[in-house]
Length: 426
Image 1 (cartoon, rainbow, N blue to C red):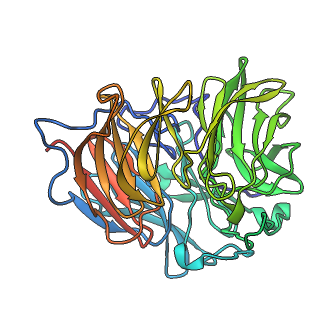
Image 2: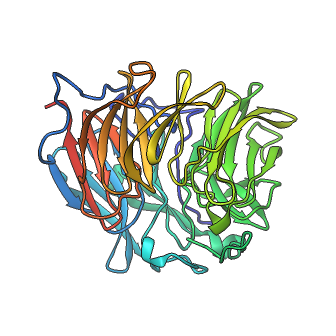
């Protein structure tokens, strides 16, 4: 059975990646961290102009960087197109595309705010395969080492019978199709299918054959991807579905079993920010009726809430750094990891936002307005928001995709298809 869409898991990367790579959604370890420095030097950070720009098609999918290649998924002329660009000049090295509808088949609401693929591709260093997921459920596996040659594919709607997402509370129905980046774990590709046959489905990453399904059968959320977590030594994955913050086992013989399912429904189907994980703790957040951020302790027998605060994030997945937690919604906030109390806030970043924590204790913050800023982390500035550098608009349209930092370059994309690459520190 064909099947496609990928994300590489941090549990078991059998082939080492270069330190400068950005091979998954939210970076090398899928948590918004990079081993690279910010590039801030002698009061300089971002040059006046990008090193290059490229039109990669409409969408909210984020770029990946592996070696000298940039991989990005966008929509062009009725096709979902996976492009490989040269990281040095942005020139297209190859394109692999397939026809597909602009929206998912059950799309409802907010069509003016998005178009094209939202799920970020996943790269597997062991096979050198790339996995993509289109809004209408086309999951595809392509060989990056063979100019994007087709390996296998499956349509999730056709194969699993997922239905339209339900109405939540008093809000109208919202359905944006498939948005979640897949995750590679060992020999499996984990995909949030969101069907009556299983919320999470594991496929053989080489063949697309189904390996197992989760016992949980919630509809898929609108998050950008499942997140690895280890609970009492057991590999698991955290997923924010339409109805729950779910933690699901991945160990042999018990894969697909539910560890925890904490109710979490948000109006306008706005379970968008992915869970943030540290050790056996998970942070979940959303706006509207929830209007909260919650830290949960997870064991193999369930989850208990540690704290809940009214500092929500609508789109930005929180980043945990040392004893602090950062999230960008309208403003960048710094919260105490242990208590949830706010330490500081500042800046103006709009509805959408993303953060990258750098090795030198700073944050690269990219806002939905196209603003790009470099901000001191709490280890350097414990009591106040301190902005080192800022550019009000680095792209021309609304910027939903996550910012990427790799090889001394910052990559910023907008939803209309402009991808801008800046060389930092020069």
